[in-house]
Length: 158
Image (tube, rainbow, N blue to C red; front, top):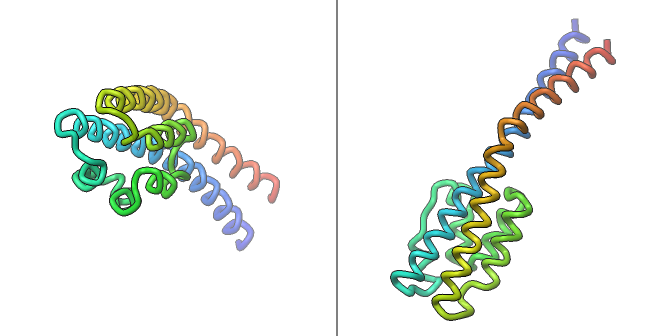
């Protein structure tokens, strides 16, 4: 009886691992979407108000970014520090694009800043589209792999 309980537990844990892997992919998609929103907001504030970065950061809010602590760090320490805070939650290409964006932000004339914003918004949108198209495939893959790993472990241990 104890053996079957253990096997059931192993199978359940493998299923949960697959679900968590899928949840990570969905979280990365939401984070990318939120960061597109931030970048577009920054562009709008620069374009229409020529606002300093401190004011821009202070006026932005997003539920997804607030939950992970990004907004708090953004307002206290700036964009680069906030990106470092959430780096593990971001796909590498999104992080690289935003790190380049943060390094050039506030260091040139208005039109250059707008061009920088637009370039990185397009890069983030391309990454978002890629992630969104890959999400169903990844979810199926993670689910299938976790079920197969769980069944394999159960069969081996029987």
